[in-house]
Image: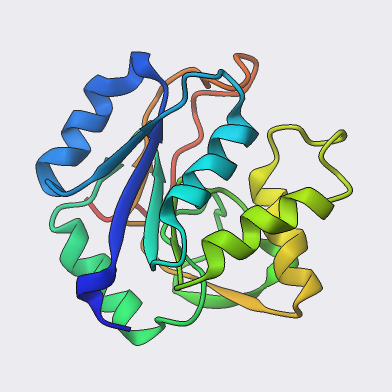
Length: 185
């Protein structure tokens, strides 16, 4: 895979554009997908369809990037271009990057998808049996998809993005204190 093919996409709600513009300062070619339907899962699926067969880093709108994010992320991607890479975790006991079982995938704050994966995951949504139980659980859907393929993912540490102290646009009851312990400033 050529890194020139790599695209950066952020999913956002219109009220969070101010945060997205901060991300765009570091990633001028950032593709912005605005959720105007108010349905997080369908927005996620549409963003995956927008990515298509290309390799992509998909981000959410409530993040802060580490300095030199692109060069740091692309160095990791160049090392592991054929696997899903998560650049954020809330896990407290993880000090180093590690391979994890697919069923442990969690958080889509900033994730790299290899070529073809976005479409395959979007297609998997049609057959995913837990959509009623988890209508906004796209990280759970990815975990189930990876598990069905017996595939691992790579959790990069330190986290290259930080979750901003914002009330969730999906569920206001979620804590706004969901920050990575190992964020690289």
